[in-house]
Length: 202
Image (cartoon, rainbow, N blue to C red; front, side):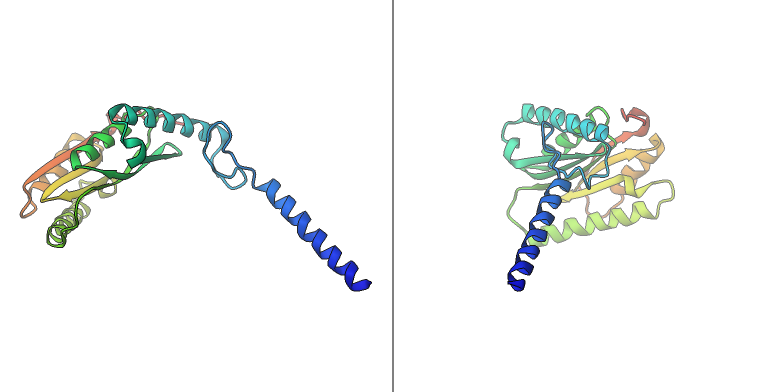
């Protein structure tokens, strides 16, 4: 009888724990669809709402470019920072989507991790990776350039640079460094100046 009571007590404690745990992890999905637990999300409610509005705005404009992006391109906005993932047909599409993201009202930064759809070519990929590494190193060692502000992609010996520059001179320096890399056929830069960004200041 005593053993039965102990088992019942343990089961009750377990069930109470589940109920309390469910109450703590209330989801913020609601009308904003963030899917982030309110209990652990460090963003304020106002920031979450702003991020949701930015994401819906960006998603709508991406679909206006091409409805196929609905399945191939995903976006996420966290504290005004935009993250883009998925696959596109060519680098020009990636560049276009990066510019579109930067045009979003209130954006603070853009991280573009879109991949190019193509059969893997080890030899070409190795060459492109070497070019990217050389340019990344050159930017790091150039005191006039803040290397962390730039994302570099190389595709068939063409360098694509995305980022923001503090001054026109810095922008020119980045492009100059890219053009000095051996075997580079072309440099396509999408570099915006800080003064031209529509960043909302808190």
